[in-house]
Amino acid sequence: MALKVCKFGGTSMADGNVMNRVKRIIESDDDRRLVVVSAPGKRYSDDIKVTDTLYKCHSELESTGSCGQTFSVIRRRFTGIVKELGIDLDIEYVLNETERRINEEKSVDFTASRGEYLCARVMAKLLDAKFIDAEEVIFFNENGTLDGEKSYAAICKAVEGELRCVIPGFYGCGADGKVKTFSRGGSDISGSVAARAVNASLYENWTDVSGFYVCDPRIVSTPKVIKSLSYKELRELSYMGASVLHSESIFPVRKANIPILIKNTFRPEDDGTLIQPSVYYKPSGRVITGIAGKKDFTVIFIEKSLMNSEIGFIRKVLSVLERYNIPIEHIPSGIDTMSLVIESSRLKNGVLENILQGIKEAVEPDVMRVTEDIALIATVGHGMSSSIGTSARLFKAMKEANINVKMIDQGSSELNIIVGVKNDECEKCINAIYREFFR
Ligand code: ASP
Image 1 (cartoon, rainbow, N blue to C red):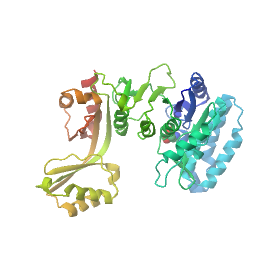
Image 2 (cartoon, protein in one colour):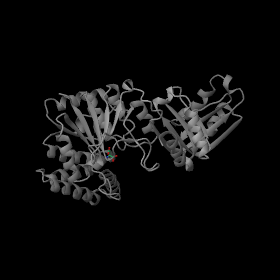
Image 3 (cartoon, rainbow, N blue to C red):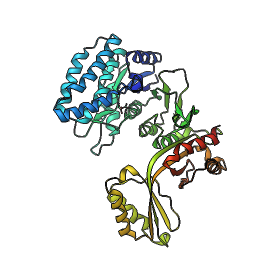
Image 4 (cartoon, rainbow, N blue to C red):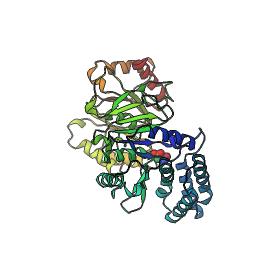
């Protein structure tokens, strides 16, 4: 029998009513046998996500020695859900245990992970499924990365012979044996790990939108939904800020060529977006797949005569950044010039000044200039490699919108064109590119 892993995000877990809806979705397909859940999210726009309340619990614990006051919010939320669902779960006992452990462990990761833990306990009861604690099946290496092989083996073993199982997302067991979380939104990664472990036929990611939009609907009104895209396109788009799926969640499934289907819990009849292995990609005549933008980059421009013939020049520059542990996003270059594009948040508290001094000492540039408040916009699509004039259309659209191009970077993979513009022109630029290719 085929096996699908379905991960449900926070809004799909927001209250008892939605959880019942999720139960119907799961039970409508016998292949949906492994379920991964996030912590309950917002019920209305200014509601607070359970995970955010848990981070507050930790702050309270740090300042007063106990999380009790804030934990009462969690308590109310889960007792309400269990009451609404009418399930036979001694939630008072589970909550008491959870509060006790939070106070005892005093760990931010442990505290933050309890939303997923409690939610999975509830869902397992609702679905009459086996609850598998992520602490026992998802493992991290010493350096904080996922220990894939160990996790896959443990998940396989835990699900063996079971009809249906529920695993909490977002956390696992660190190398020190203590609960450790992924970064925010990390339940998407847990779902992907589970799908890879059981070699699922499909990884369904249920959220509150009907798929991946061509660009951010907060920037362009009612953009088109992307019907299908490749892992590579998704990686580019989500890295650049398209936020439906955690950008790291494709890695486990990608290795096993497992497709991901984004679905809307509130409109299950919509097709959603299918993310396929790049090998299955069929050119569809589409030039551009999506557009995404990210603000707040800093560009360090370096000029030195005969830079191109000076052996080791780039290495010397990069070693300065390595010394300060700063990742570089792009390095556009000319014959005697190079630029380093870096996330501005990495350069705070004197780091930028130290780097500039380090570069000065390492390579004695003729000119060095810093431009801040730069937004990067990625226009992504396999289709552009086989269609002449894509960049011409893109730059024409920018010119017509009167947008100054500060930087251009196009990899030879021809999968994307990245332009740098001023932060405050980011939205205008995305709109202009969207109009050119989609309207
Ligand atoms: N609950 C966690 C968060 O809010 C993880 C997740 O939802 O995926 O980030």
